[in-house]
Length: 55
Length: 227
View 1 (spheres, chains in turn cyan, orange):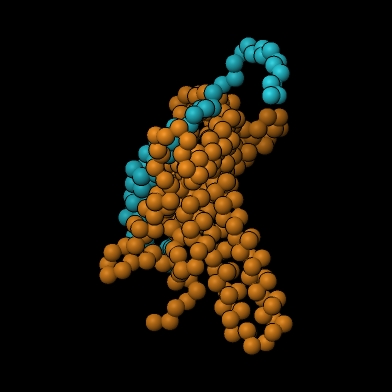
View 2: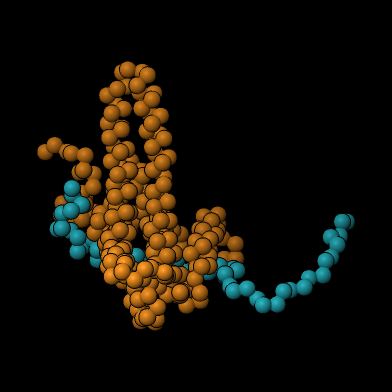
């Protein structure tokens, strides 16, 4: 099985961590969402209903 | 030299340059950089939605202390998902079939969860080695069994991912090798090509393997850190 060939193992391990931490993680970090997930508020918001203006 | 069926998994190199570098950095090209606009294009919006979905799914069972793992788990999920999906295309090499990559990813992360648990709450994480309500004579055997199951987790994670993908790719290759010469006889080829298509759709459970991988990682973190 060629996967058991230990020759490129160290290189592959280092390259995988380098791409994972240097390339993928900064790309995912730059994704700023407009509504970031946050914990629930303790108070329930009270909203008064309004009627849609049908003009 | 004659190619065997396993030669698709040997780490490719061209003129001495290992091409696994390209096959691992290529998925990053498929993630568009985030723009500073309020409403971005469709791909960025979909990607953002997916990131939020994955982060919420992974982080909601955890307390706030576990939320510092959000970045590493989400990016790990993306990394593995893209690599596995790209490997389903013809003539592409899947880096995650290599045992080395899976070991490099599984072992440090598992060790991190273990050491986090041992450092923050050492007695509680050691209590996990003994299930509640065991009769006294069985305690030594159970502790040995639980320790073994704990220590074998990174190997299980690693072998699960690589074995599933390797088996899937091999099956596709075998069945397509059987389909082509049989194209002269009609009924067999229709059955075989249906089987091949069915297998390809099953092989899209490769992305389910990612889910399995990250969720198992999450499970170990969850158990160690919070209970």
